[in-house]
Image 1: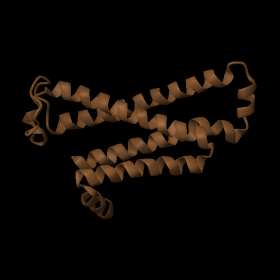
Image 2: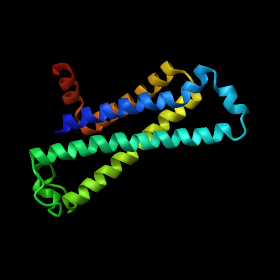
Image 3: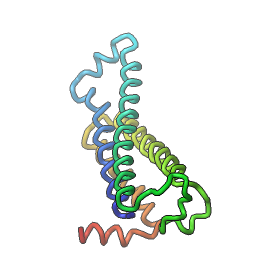
Length: 168
């Protein structure tokens, strides 16, 4: 179950990297940036709209993949009742906090939204500062790779992650 989640998160982060680096970099590469800067209120309003679009896209992508995961978990394990304690599942048997399955799903969803939205904001900031597709992609992938490496060291799952990549 953990490896499926890691691959799902890698895929979501890849989608967000592609979208985040494209939103602001495209202005400079097409030569449209001087026209936006000369327009009255043009740059600010368009920037706010682009940031809002990136955040809405993040919400849509995270919601689609989260709902799909919940649907698969429901088919494989079943939910019984959303008011049951999360400890009925083997993965959460030793959890110290007594929350229901429904509360867990809500908390999980909002934590994912917060995480992915903050990542998109970082990628957007990089694309504004760099204005180069390749460099923006490399910095965003490096930032995500560093976070994945730190997570793997702290979680003790680096060996399992490498073994999963090698064996497919």
